[in-house]
Length: 232
Image 1 (cartoon, one colour):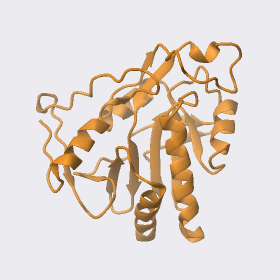
Image 2: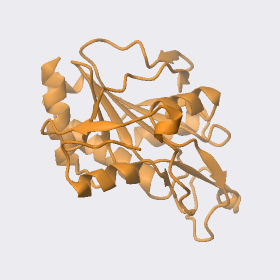
Image 3: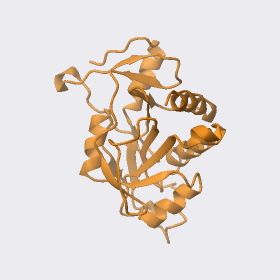
Image 4: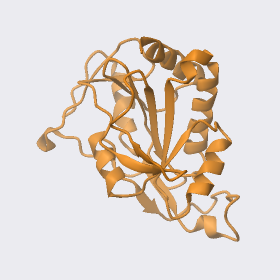
């Protein structure tokens, strides 16, 4: 069972809801099995952040991926003063992914200039077949050229999702009303969709790890990012 302390029942329900796949135009599936039988328990505490502080902290996963420029990015080896923001998704996502990136972009713009350099936003595509490095870079640049795009959709990202108590990505038939994508011709965008974890993870100095499960505003992200970055 999951053990939750220091939060209201409503907050606990939100946390459990985050462990479900984000439909992105398809039907959501069952949450990841984080039961005691698998040796996993989750406790949470409230340190005044708008997300849920993990206790014990979840470290950055041991994950090495290529960036859109072809460089190796090691998520587990980050500077001590860095605030690392991580989200898994794909560029054809009709709703959650662009909304989340827009919110994080606005939040980063709200930070004092000296703090912005301490915040690293990572978007891991779980759809490498369509999200080529060039396509992913073009998509991220619409939100913030400083966002780092990583090429996932592999066994490595599946292992990282497990480390974070998140469900693996699943390919599903696209919804019939899925909007067209600028990189697609004809009806290619309707071939399939991606069910993916909808949570945003943020790590900061002092071994803090915080998960955000939906409904967080840019202003709230900015408040938490400011506190985390200032602590570095």
